[in-house]
Image (tube, rainbow, N blue to C red; front, side, top):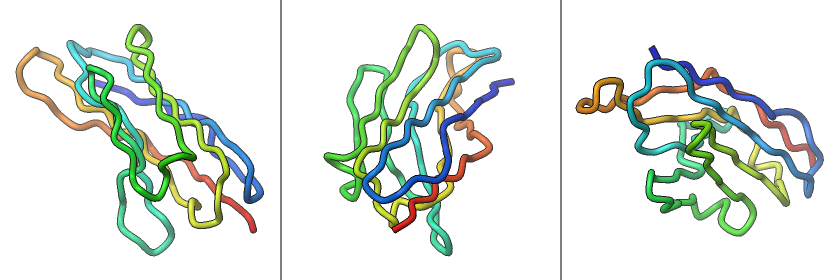
Length: 120
């Protein structure tokens, strides 16, 4: 199995910062992409940022210039530094890891979600 442990959510005022962490562990052969999705209240889950194994990062337009995604391949950990937070960033943030346990078939694994609340 693959386990994802998230940390770093919380309550912050608009303009503040938070840093999310997600560590993957278990029977992992190789990780492809790592990233964060979010589900704002009453809305569907959406991409926040994702990084490939070669380091290419894709950000949602709404977070570009404010969020920074980074990855520590040695520790199978991904970080999301969130600056200049806005009330519309309020959401449950989910870590996502695409990994293979055998070297062939890749599956998506999800964290339990961490709440980020930005007050105005």
